[in-house]
Image (cartoon, rainbow, N blue to C red; front, top):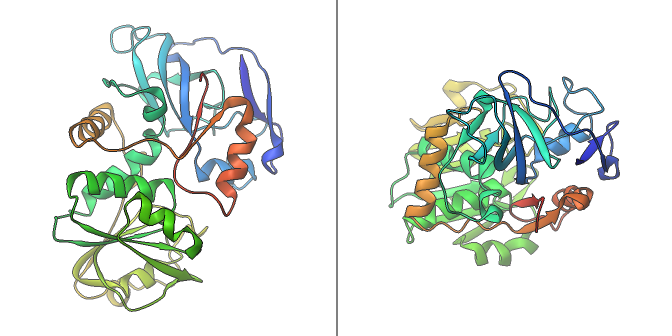
Length: 319
């Protein structure tokens, strides 16, 4: 089969398109024929050698959509069943989805029922599931004023699409370090754009709910812009900082407010199908911003790391 192999960490040029043996099933694992997958910032970090537990050579890729090609659980995962696989150790402890086929533990394969096209379904697993879980944890009501920190990211735009499809009149503000992206952000549905400089929101605006995608690097500043009884949901780590340093919960969680989080490893087939039903019921626009071929995966990484990056980037194995 064709796959993208990283033999040693480095830049996008280290993503090598080559022939590798097609995996063979083993007890408890089934083979997925991959139809598509999203590109994630965590895969860029791994490619660069910033995931200490990952050994090379490795086929990256932490998510995929496709169909069961060879099963070891015919009752739950019959051949040709449409499936999603997300998180776990795919693409890290064992080879992942940057390929035509991937061998995955059965407990990490989730059967789904959907009529969405592969190009739409491939945009959903990591990105929309993360946005959906964050949305639920924020307990959003139609009267809320919302802020998305890291609005140009795939999760930021997915969150906007999920919210606006259900509450068209709700006000959602997005932050960006590059105001040149303001027109694109407003085009996809953000009501207001705020500049972010060195991890600090410019201005004194305040909000009821904040989706924090920059992460620990900016959480303290987010509380400076949160209304009393408000919620900050820390979901992303786009700021490159993994831990809260010198964080005093009594002083830094302001104004009788709340700090929560969401992690996409909190997943099962019922939650995924709830998301797919929500998308269908509310007619959510889940089309990706960019689609690449498997052979052009290094270009997909380069784009996602560039200043032009915007929204969700996916790869389809067949176009």
